[in-house]
Structure formats: C-alpha cells, structure tokens
Length: 426
Image (tube, rainbow, N blue to C red; front, side, top):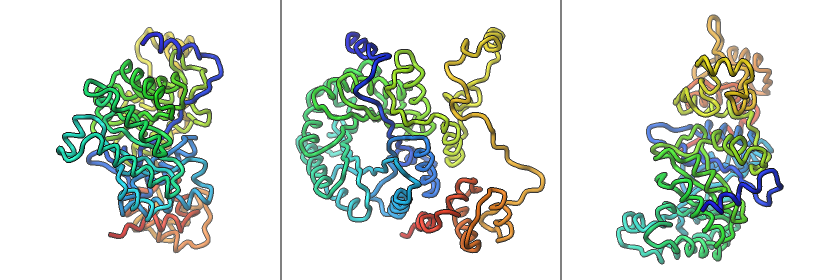
C-alpha cells in the first residue's frame, strides 16, 4: 500500500498523463436530500453557475421521471444557445433497458449514468432473491448496449455499494462487473461508496486494482456517513490516476445529499489544489475556477434554505476568522502562518447586503412599474415588459422566495426556456 501511495507522490511537480475532473451531482443526488429540494429554475441556475465555475459535468437529473423532462429540454436548449456550454449535461437512470428506453424517448440527453447494486448484501436485500449476481450483470449490460445503440455518447456504469462489494464476499465480482460493462460499451465505471463505508487506504487500494484491471476512467461517488467523503474521493481518485486512467469525482455544492451528504464541491477542489503532495501538481482539470466558490455555495444554501455552517471549509463565516492570541499575532505578521489559501481565491469579497428602508421589489404580486424599476437598477432591458412580469410572477410562485438578480436576468434574456422550466404538467 505504501509503495503505491508514494508512487503517486513522485508525480509532484512533473507533467501528469491523467487528470481528475469534477462531475457535480447536486441536481441529482443533492436534491434527494430529505425534507428539502430545489425548483426547476433553481436547478437551472446551479447548472449555469457550475458552467461558469468550469466544472466538467453536471448530472442534472432523472430523464425517466416525467416531471424532469421540460427542465431537461429547457437546459439542453440553453446549451444550444451557448449559455450552458461547454459543461456536459447528463442524466441518471436505473440500469434497466426499459428506463433507458423511456429516458431516450422523452429527452435528448446524450450522456447517461446507469446504476445498479453490486454488493452481496444489496443484491439479496433489494432483489429479495429474485436475481443472482449474474442476472445483475445481464440486466446492466443490456441497458448499456441499448444506450449505445441509441446514440448515447458517454455511458457511465454505477456500481452501487461498490465499497461493500470489494470486500469479503467476492473481491473479483466488482472487476467482473466492470469488465462486462466495458465490453457492452461503457465509457466509465462509477465506484460508489454508497454508505460512506470506505477508508482512504481501502478506497485507494480498491480503485487502483479496479482501474488497473479494467482500464477505463473511474468515477468516485462518496457519501459522508463516517465523515470520510472528501478524503475518500481524493484518495480514490489518486488510486485511479496512479493506475493510469482519468478520474472523475462526484461532488455536491455544500455537501448536500442523502443522509449525511456527499463530498463537498469546494472542499474537494481545495484538497486537490492546496494539500500536501497535490499543491501545484496540476492534477485537477485546469478549467476549474475557484473564484465561483462563494457565489455558488451561497446560492445553493439560500435555495435549499440551509445556511452554510460557520465552520464550512472555505466558505463558512469562520473559515478565515482568527481569535486566539497566538493565531491573531501570527496572522498579522504573515497570513501564511495560519492560512493555506486566502478568501479572495474563493471569490469572497463583496458581500451582498439586503437593502432596508425604502425598497422596490418585484415578485408574485408585483406590477409593471415596479418591475421596470428593478430591471433598470439591474441594467436589464426587455422588449416585452408584460410578458417578463408574467414570467417573474410565475417564477416567484415556482421558487416560493424572492428572485435573485441572476434569476431575473435569466427570465429577461431567455423567456422561452424559462417558460418551459416553469411548466410541470401532471
């Protein structure tokens, strides 16, 4: 184990053949957080901010779900108009041929991740003895082959509960599963630490062995049940890179997700660019723009109605606060004494303060005069104020909260797509 890990560190300061890319899953796994959710307009804004941040891919939702279809189509149209480019927009389905059929019948997505459980405990517990592990592989490969046959450009295959598959039951089954996926046409394998069960040592070993055997890019999808999500994501990705393939880390903004959440987007980026052995290594996709961190973290916090924790990595209120006498003295002499990075690197600077006193807003019950005043303050011009007001009213109702300046800008500039976003018909 130590030999493998030191091999990875020897790359420091040298050009790397393989890189780590970010695939954010806020709009798929993050919105599955119990008790909270995002509107379709808010999910679209997350995609826009991820694109501005230089994130490689957004797993934007569920193409087999009827209520996601207008949202998916509107986002694909925004991509065609250049607003959501170059980010890759992808969907998530169960690894079943019928789900692939539905997804591709009703959406134009060209990138899919197909998911099925691989661990013995889930195969028995979820399928109730109706399916063997061979049946699981057959179902998965049929879904992959169908997706490829219908023109899907990239197919990722998700091994749900991979961390408990690659353990005591049958360590070779995960490789058998992945090789079958590759033969069927899969482009990537997603190693899912679905219950946050792995440790950094075990996930490095498992992913390194898997990547060596399969020679496909590996995605890391880590949950935070034991507090390891970010560390496991980074070390698992290093296992893939050290085995000679690219790695993709699944993140969510502010670590949102089922139960204790997923690997936090900002934390992962900081770990890959500021930590010992990886700082200045160039291992992370160079398009990533950390200066968007503050903006996207705050937008998602407000949209979910979940304040950022005071000690949140990078963007928490105390991330750059120093009180201890020793710390304060050291900071005043040289900030590098107690900071690995500065707030300006995360786009922390100007703070938006809600105005008080005499304020004109526009919303669910606003009128044309108020709207035109707000648009003028934002420097936005529109051809049809009445239609813009109509969409603003519906968007406010859709979000159930005050619209942000960027949301108003989107409404004013892309009314057709926004109209489609706001249309969810049962």
